[in-house]
Image (cartoon, rainbow, N blue to C red; front, side, top):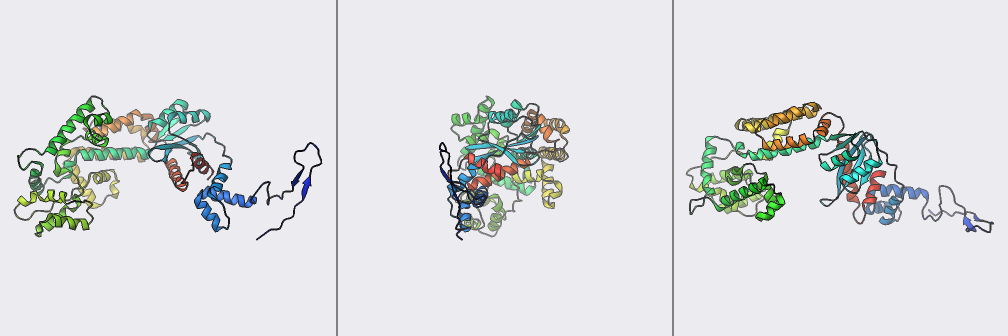
Length: 460
C-alpha cells in the first residue's frame, strides 16, 4: 500500500531565524528526518528487545519490513534507561559474558523479582560503589562467595546478609560425595565370595616377575606422601604441581585424597568397566575367554573404552581360578551413594534403601554422615537457623574431616548462613534472572557488548 500524502510547506518571516522553511508534521504518522512511521518504529523496537539483531531481522522480513541487525541494535541503544532505585530486598549474583574469563553482576529487586542493574564485573569494590550510590537496602541475598560479602559489609554494614539455601545444600552434597569417596572400601560387600574375588585380584597389584609391588603403586604412594608433606608446609596446589612436575588437577587430587588405600588398591577403584563386569563374568563362564572378542561385545553395549587393555587386566587373575567364577555384586558409584544419602527417605526405592542401609551398617562414618544430613535438611526445610551452632558441634564430634571443613566454612560465615536458614528470602529469583541473561546473551552473538546486554535485561 502506498499513501500519497500532501502536507503544507511553511515559511518563517523572521530575518534572524536560521530555519526559513520547514514541512508540517502529522501527529502519529510522520516525524522530522524520519524514515519510518512512529508505529513502525515502535514495532521494530519491540522486535529488537525480544530477538536482538539477526533473529529480529528475520522476523521483520516476514512482516515485509527490510531492516538490518545494526539498525535494530541501535534502536535498543537509543532507548532511555529506566530509573535505578535501591530496593529493600536486594538479590546479588554473578553471570558469565565469556565463560571462564569475563563475568558480570546482576542486581534484582527481591520483592518484585525484576532486574534493577547490571555491573560490568564481580569485584567487591564495584558492588560497594553501587551500594554507596543507592543506600537503603535492608536485606542482601547472595551466594557463598566472599567477594559479595566483603562489598556488602563495606558499604551496607547494617543490611542483613542472607546466604542462599540452595548453595548451602549443594556445598553439603559436595562434602558428602568426597566423604563417600574416602570410604569407598565400605561400598563393597564383605561376603565370602567378595573376599575370594579380592584375593584373586590381589596379584594384579604385584609385579609378576619380581613378586614385589608394581611400580605404579610405588609411584602413587611416593607422590601422595610428597604432596601431603608440601601441603603441611603451607604450599599451594599450583606450587606443589610445579615442584613435583604434576598437572594442577593431579596435584589437587592427591591433596584432597584422605585414603591412600583407595588410590593404590585397584579392587576398590571405580572404573568405566564396572557396569560391564557382570556380563564379562557371564561370558567367561560360558567359555569365551578371548579378551579382544569380549571387548568388542561390550563396546557394542556402550562401553566407552577404546582399547581392550582394561578387559585384559580384569580377566588376567580369572585365568588362575579353577571352575566357574561367581558374578560380582554390583558396586554402587560413590556419587550414587551420595545421592541416596542426600535424597529424601520417602523418595528412595526399596532396593536403594536396602543397599544404603547395608552400606551404613558396614561403615559407621557414612552412618554418621547420613544422620548429619538428615539433621541439616530438617533445619533447612523448617527454617531453624538457631540450631546451626548445635549442628556444627555435632559434626565436629565425629571423625569426618571433610565435613569438618564444611562446618568450618559455615562457622566463618555464620551470621549470613543463620539468616539464610531463618529468613524466607533466597537467591532463587536471582538465579532465574541469571538463566534469562544466558538466553539473551545467546541471541546477541557478534560484536554486541555489555551495554547492549544491560539495556535488554533492564527493558524487557
